[in-house]
Image 1: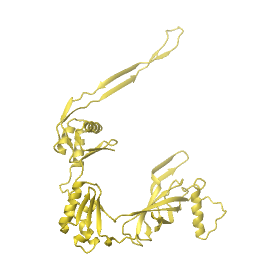
Image 2: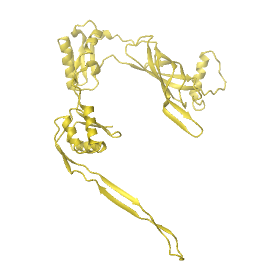
Image 3: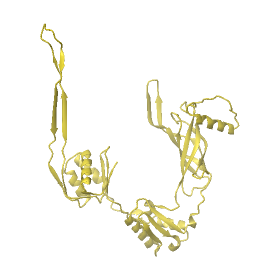
Image 4: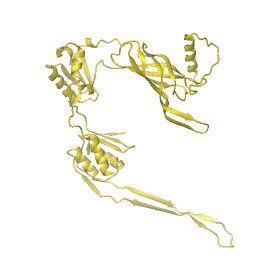
Length: 365
């Protein structure tokens, strides 16, 4: 297990020989963003797995409104179909989406429907944060799970009350935004770091000449479009996003207690420490004894409790010395020399961090 852990740590943490990343993968461009859309609609065609109208009166209301818009008068009528369900429809309008384009949507039941499998979403307007309709969704739903139920048992796999419709919404309104009129574009780093921001600034200035880029803080680099000498903002972005930069990040150790996974960054360092690790095993065994009275005597048969308890301490290796790590491989080799399981290794790392000997950000999931 110790060898496996060392191999896992080395496999997950050693960086590639080429550490340069495209700027487009490190930053978000000011103005180039999507917009969230949401709508309230109706799914039909379900095989008896829809909303119970007594428990979900809003389903009956939206169905009545829909039928009346189609010219069917249902005022005062009593109808309780089980093949319809009220749903929320969500989507993300990508940047620069044009009218007539299609986007994916997600459909989620909000009533007591058991499954959306086999259902069809009826035409549903999707609104933005400003209340305007930007897209209209409709189509057959691809459910994310399946559910089966009998008289005495029920089995569910996945989430049958949620699904998606690929390319299920058509864009009807465009976001009014003229990207080429922007005189200054800000680059927001996904992981703010002063060193990375300075490298992005230097790379852009070297590519365009002069000093069109200026680092504002650890998470922002400002770019003056006019100073680049390019024809338009779009042309500047086309050239800039493919420039290569080597990012810098804080040393980090991430552990997952449930799976026993440990991931270390290449810059992790551990000071010179000594570690002792051992386990205690408590064993309790019940061995009751039956006691019977003598023959032909008056008495009762009783059970006398007998308990055997013992504590066993696993023989450890005493204090194990871990030298101050000059590289990740030395840190892994030092920790792996203890010969402990991944779960115990996590506890050791916690103790090293508490002692102030782990020089990295410690993240526990």
